Figure: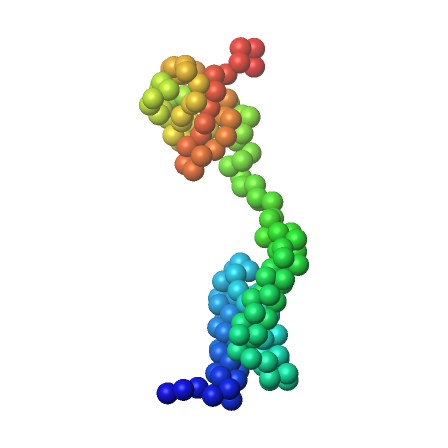
Length: 155
C-alpha cells in the first residue's frame, strides 16, 4: 500500500492529536514536569499540519524544534518550581543536642541511645569508642540513625 501525500497529511494530523493528548494525560498523572514540552511541540506541529499543510518530515522537524525550544525556555521556571527547600522535621531539632548512650559502640558497630523518651540507633564517623553512660552530640540524622560525635569536654 502506497501512501499518498493526502494520506500522509491525515496520518500527521492524527499523530499530533494523539501525541498531544498522551502528553497532557502523562503530565496530569505525574507530579513533575515530564511531557509538557511535547504537548506544546505536538500542538504547534498540528497547527502547521492543518493550517499550512506542511509535509510530514517538516512536521517532525517543527515538533522537535518546538519541544526543544520550550524545554530550553522553560528550564529556569521549572528549576524554580521544582527546587523547593527541604522542610525540616521535628527530628531536625535534635541536631546539636546531647544524647545519653545506653549501649556502647565503636566505629564499625552501632549503639543505642536515649533522647527524651525515644530510643535511637547511633553511629559515628569518628574513629573513637563510645561507652554506655557517656553523652554524645548529635551531628545529623540518616534515616532512623543518629550520627553522633564525642561530646566536647566542658559542655
